[in-house]
Image 1 (cartoon, rainbow, N blue to C red):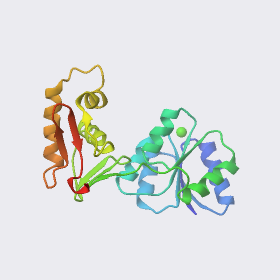
Image 2 (image 1 turned 120 degrees about the horizontal axis):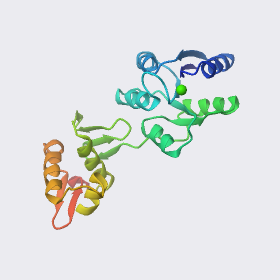
Image 3 (image 1 turned 180 degrees about the vertical axis):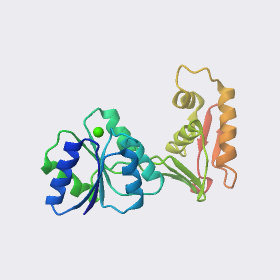
Image 4 (image 1 turned 135 degrees about the vertical axis):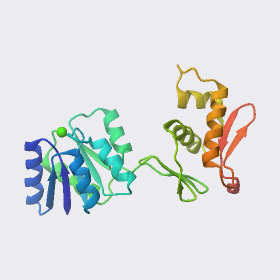
Length: 225
Ligand code: CA
């Protein structure tokens, strides 16, 4: 396999390079995040072994940017920090699996084999309603193949509605999920945001976002009934 190792720590980088070469793989090592991203973007690899804490650009950003530019090379992330939040963040950013340092070489090799076969952990599932598509890994939203430019809040609002497609979502739940408890927003603010979101999402037929009077909103494909 062609393997890219992005790891700034010299001893770890050398150990990985030596071990993987001994297993018969071709290995390229980048010690800087930005350099690693450029190499990953411009050359084909079977697997990328990606450290998270890196100079130049961190591993989360590298994974996210690669997925955003449609690079689907399997990524095995390495982290010294086994905090669940980091792992979730890494997987959401598009990594396929992770390994917590220190790890044994046997486990590394086994994980690499699994990841290169598109292993056990599925990438975040794309959400799709009619011709509206949302990719949680790259946060890319398209309607009829045309990319929509959403603000982070509009994105959260749309993701919430899409995850509940076909079900009415109450205003209270939207305010709580998108703005949080402590915010000053009221229902008028929500209506304004919803109008903006509709202006982007529902420029074409069929209209997908519906008002559920006295309750909230629902996103559904009218043709799905
Ligand atoms: Ca590091």
